[in-house]
Length: 546
Figure (cartoon, rainbow, N blue to C red):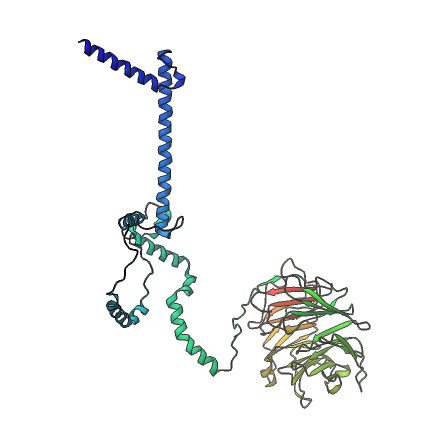
């Protein structure tokens, strides 16, 4: 009994010593202190340990969620966050097992199988060319299941309302289908379509190009719609140097980028038109001639400048030289302010006195002939290739002249006209428009008019004051008619339907008193000169080139 009691006491003392050693320092040593304080401190330690364990568990759960999300993203879209490492553990185990073995060995039996392999590949070459196989296939796609009913943005992939779980490969297939529906314009990127089109069209295109003499670049044949003209206002063409007087002439060079403006301030200015800055290139001052009209020769080499004088000027664009020409030999004209240049750049026709039309050579600048109307001449226009001339004047009749023989080939009364004031012919010569001092514009089919039909195709009554200027655009789908006597006195006519565009002039925009107008060769720009010295520039969105 004494041994048992002694052993029990020693064990109790050892247990008490261990508990005392495990207690924190702030609880005191040797078992001292009160029992209440000791219990409170132990409970606080238990709570802090529980919070710490709960926090560690939450952090571990968050890390596992992030890993699971990255794993799913890598499965769907490839390795996004780390390089792909497949079978790392297995590779390490294999490397450990193969330690000490040679790095490689030579397979002596490979040659026999290579010939058979090459023969099989040569036989199936055509089949493999037709079928494209994926470079890499994920074997885990079939084993993975996706719940497309659980995520709201994936429910659109369901084919049936009750469908929820689908395989990984089916999920990828439906994503591709949805992408092709949302982006139908990516068909050009399909290799099969591009290859078939390339092989089928390559030989035929080459043969067609060699067999024809048509233009390789075909102009747009889309028709301009009536009603509303899609246009926008750009920076004024002469914003860098406005004119000090009314603008009497604006005209585009045949390259569509150079614009001239001239007016009563005796200056002719050239601008580089881009719609943004419209840089001024040059300004030429003509000392003794307030400019009434200035026009490029169609070949773009010279500018003819005239005013209310017996003479006119020629400005050479290459030499930058101004030459004074006139008075014309054998004529006593008081003014050469009104003229037109033939489309072939060979002839300049001036409106003279007493119904005479003066024909001047553009090369020698000498008078080469005249034609005479019965009444006074007011307006002229060249037709077609420049071999015919149309004149209109005070007797209300329209004359057609053959310039090769200088004879009148047709004469007819402009319906309802007493005094003709303006004339314009379409670029192809199939239509011409005649304006009068009453504001009426008659549009004729030229072939029918020459054939004896005197009724106009359309009578336009949108202006109420004298018609001073008219102009067809490059494809004859727009006809601009202008009166200098009325504010905003300008209308744009849709030629195929012969109706005025309802949104022109634009609302909340004033044209002031328009005096001249021109369209760029490609139809993309329209310039309007007014009495306040500004050249308004507009972009016509139907036309894609200047």
